[in-house]
Length: 199
Image (cartoon, rainbow, N blue to C red; front, side, top):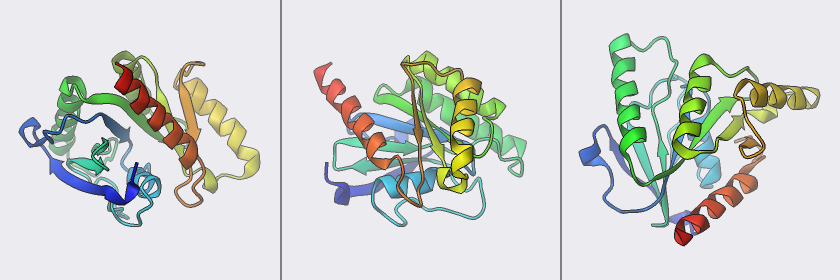
């Protein structure tokens, strides 16, 4: 896979705007300030392909990133940001639900959680949906570099327990600063794509 051929194809708000290429898609879900854009930029070796912002809640569209005409990463609007109006939150929720529940190309949803904090009620609810939709859960624990070494094991154990993860699920510690977890996540993505070819 050539990561130099990574580009934002479209920012969509309605199914009619979704890409027509029948490529497998991996969605990224998580709270507004969890670091989805930073995760994407690190995974794709780019500094600013996905725009990061000091203001959470800026992503108000479904952003489809084409990776070498092999797959899409789909960055979903973040949830749980209180300063966005209830009407806007509801609009985003409907947009996300429509995509997640109807998109046949969606092969897996990654849940991104902040490794420094316990999963929120929204995180737990989203993870339950991911298990229902995909059978397995894939969790990316971001900002792992912000923890002391002595805190990492305990925080990951808390995430594992609070989200009800099992041996068949995946929990990847990740740092967009240091690249921790990047290779492991790509290994999983490549395995997912290989399994897709066999179907």
